Amino acid sequence: MIKPDATSKGYTGAILDQMIKAGFTVKAMKWTKLTTEQAGLFYDIHRERPFFGELVEFMSSGPIVAAILEKDNAVEDFRKLIGATNPAQAEEGTIRKNFAASIGENAVHGSDSNENAVIEGDFFFSKLERF
Ligand code: CMP
Image (cartoon, rainbow, N blue to C red; front, side):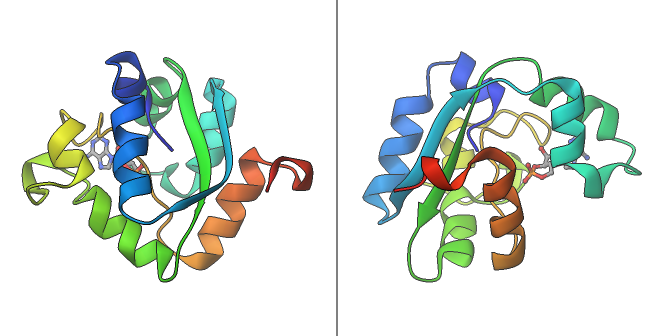
């Protein structure tokens, strides 16, 4: 997912370009905006965290790009490509180092396991939206 901070700053194209140049293939993609309820469901595992309210407000504050990306070893390679959750700790050249402002507004989200990638893909896309 490309988050509202990045879409609002006009970074969508540059971020997608970096993902595609890193070898990821687009299987599904949409420009959409989450309601606070949808953002809460997407991040349900963080419901008890102190930052949950802030996270839900932010993630529903503007448009996002949701995508299913394919690659061998995709989860691990994507997490390397985007960098640490906190952009201050992200390595040079990573998407969060290049485009993110803070731990809350960190430009992109990547699934943390194959299992969650399936759950998160199903959250946004029907079978008819995947090619
Ligand atoms: P993401 O990879 O989308 O997964 C959960 C998100 O919660 C994370 O990126 C951050 O944007 C957000 N998050 C994690 N820790 C904090 C924090 N301490 N304060 C605010 N937001 C956070």
